[in-house]
Image (cartoon, rainbow, N blue to C red):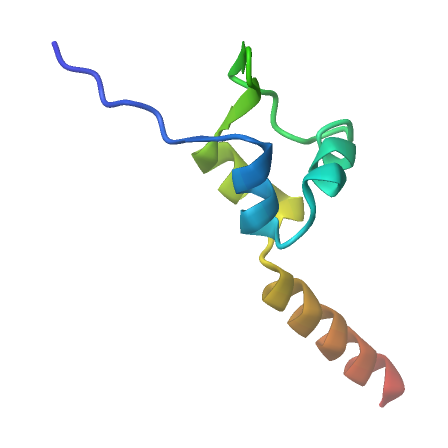
Length: 77
């Protein structure tokens, strides 16, 4: 039986994915609803990349900006 290895992310990879600093990631991981880490290693915590990508707060910065811009335009009209 062969198991497929998990796609994992550390704080640096999450920061890159979200377009934020690693310090901001440390704030985000304490928020309710943020995915739980799958392991704690000597180098730090690691998360399942699929869960991070599916996290509602994890929309890419461009998507967040476009959403904000559209909401602003709608409220102006």
